Length: 296
Image (cartoon, rainbow, N blue to C red):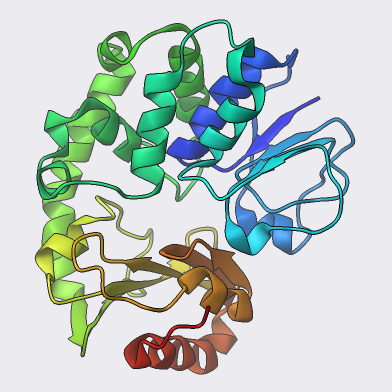
């Protein structure tokens, strides 16, 4: 039996909860959603899939992305919740060995980007927000992801933030966010009410505070971030996200991206596709966002 989940903060919290409540000894298998959608990962009987699209070979599945909802019977739980961690937490309720309510609430807040302007501008003042930013979803950082799972399984946020590796990552993240601000300003343009961040000239892709673009471009209702896949230059990744401050985007971006080999939530989603399709896909995605018509 393995935990198979996505390498983001929600996925890490999912792993913490599943390790606590289930008898699992194997290390976490970290997987990107597109690899599940395209059948690139070997999912086995006994696997517990969380925060990822459904695979019929798994034994348990937990998710909250509406584009992943299925109509066939399965073991586990699916619901429209702020985080996949919330789905697991409510499914197992009082079976946990300790109180994870604060951690799950943090996962809810971070995964749904329910942040204040101060949390976006000064994440160093908010431990959970800053900790979540140390989780690099691009590249492979499995030793650190696993380290965070171990820390969060056994300690509270105060003790986690005192860990030497976490402290180093937090310092690097604060410095990185300063550089990321400059890169956003240099490589983001406005097209009507859509902000477009094009990082295709970079390898690896710059990383930083994903909500910062909304404070820097307050007239934007949705951001489009475009970059090459860090492990395959022949693929393009497009991230869409509603502004968390200017909430006037009417497009369900998860539903929109489902037509372009991707998916996600109403307010955030991503897709990965062959670079040869970029000239076809990207203008169509932008056109839908600029028209800003409801697709629900």
